[in-house]
Image (cartoon, rainbow, N blue to C red; front, side, top):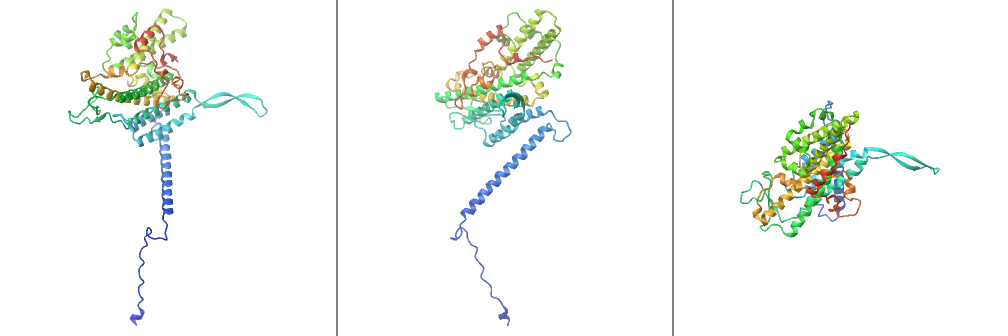
Length: 471
């Protein structure tokens, strides 16, 4: 009886191998799942970008004060800091070597800088246009258009940005020079310029670079130089348009002599003034001393302009004094031009910093910070290229082993005088041209000797001369 109640066990089914079964076709389902996964990942990335953008703009609206305590900075300064920090600490950093940016860094830079620049699309002005009504009559109406300075300079800066990253990308496959770690043995180390011990040293073949490679390096240097000059011109133009803050004016001494000091004041006010000789007579042995001279010159220019403006408003005073002040002010501006030419990597002056911190114009903040970032990177790229060319010179002629100083290096970087002409017009970007090619108009500047001789007899062709004092 017990044997009859027992139920026989059913045999267990073997698990079916989908890949081996001829009746199952996994290709379509697998590809569908992969496509679904890709769509989900793309959607997730899009959501992450939106959240990141929302967080960035929230921080900008709160003036970098995420606590909501109302202690944030102005929106213009917050936007300027955002562009500066994105370039300096997050993307570019210090360019120790010549080579392309990391792909993820490049994508992040393009994405986030586009977010920040998108704000300028909504900075508009009213312009009159002709409108034809339905009945055929013509009338003039006002429409909104992006502000003129942004409309011209934002595309120009984007092109300069692309030129600079393309210039770095060109070094991807080069094999005629290489870098050795600063911690390597002395026998393995290459050449180091300017005693920058924290940078890797450059090594080239025993006979130096080939002629073809040398010409190619010079072409990349010219490209970086073009970006440097154009970004410097835009930056100077924007800074000149910013009003001088009252907080800066309150710190100025009563007269230019107190600002400059007796030796410098006498050098500026001599009967026959040569800006080149003046700079040769001043101690410019360190960056700190150059910046100090620039601060004093800018302060004296503001003092002289204020005094001329006050005399004009009162409609009295000695015309001879007015002429002398105008002459001295032009001489100081000429010196400032030469300082900017010889030391393009110089930190911002006290006046520039004060203007940026007090600025409330968001459009100016974007143009100033974006152009300053590109100027800094272009200057760094030029220095890295000059490191390689210096190592090449030593390899060809070891007797040239005299370490160049930062002053000498920077002094040879630019010889052109930036003008207030629109960059898009000067560089001829409306015409068809190669990706790495720019018209030569911007580079056909006079030599330093010709420039200094001209500046003695005429008003300097500088953006600074376009600045009108606003009381």
